[in-house]
Length: 317
Ligand SMILES: Cc1ncc(C[n+]2csc(CCOP(=O)(O)OP(=O)(O)O)c2C)c(N)n1
Image (cartoon, rainbow, N blue to C red; front, side, top):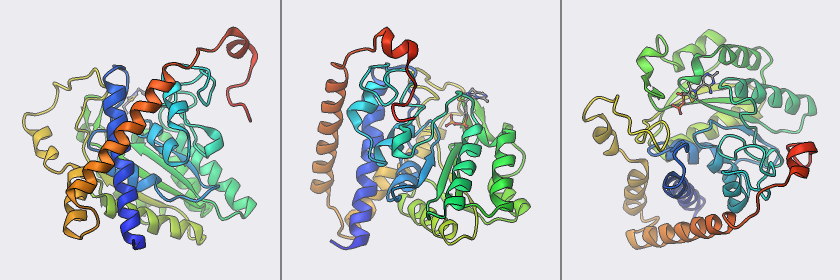
């Protein structure tokens, strides 16, 4: 198999993991934030990073980003309802706080915005260490309206830090459409910082992965940050319990026709990379992996007071 084919399959598999975890978790947890429709952004961003790279994911994609960075699915699931086997030993939810030891920065305060600055800080550390690592900050369109955006992007630009900023623009912040969140387009802010801005079709996983790859290569070469705007659509509600009645009629159906998984399946079939039976087999494999990890996680114990009371959040911190 050529490198291209392997990459396309791996991107597809990761998108399937995103969708299947959404389905399985969403059925039991009304507070889960589904990434239905945004799988291409997530897979495109987190596939193929190097050991030592640091990611500060958007919460809508945090669990899949952690998985892509090598974290164990069972432990990630154990973190959904605070089990002791989770990466934070039950003290912080794995859907908004990934494992630090896998190079994943979480939303430690729960506030949207600071993760961009954490990523810029990680990039500064990488630059000072001269270790060739990069940092990747991924955030929503609503989050881009926070002041942290300016401080992080400005710092990255003036210090030419090895950081890539990706706006996962799903066109909503809870029930607020992006047109009511910010003036102008997010990517058009880039020239104001003197950095390149690239708008990407966030439903096209190959375009996404190539754009990220180019931005990362630029960052690694010492040429500083890039701002990518991955334009996509949130097909589900803000949370799994949200039926999203605030959306105009027909909008969801229109975007569902550009389902990123179906688009990639069609492309792979047309290029002879993976046919329909092959895709079905991969779906079954992913469904089995997710089901097994979930059933195991739900057998795991809850932490006792000795963990919750006196210990630190991260074992190795
Ligand atoms: C500083 C801050 N303000 C408000 C919130 C509450 N909040 C949680 S999710 C969310 C929507 C964020 O929208 P966006 O960044 O576009 O991400 P999306 O949910 O669309 O993926 C808000 C306002 C928060 N967590 N932090």
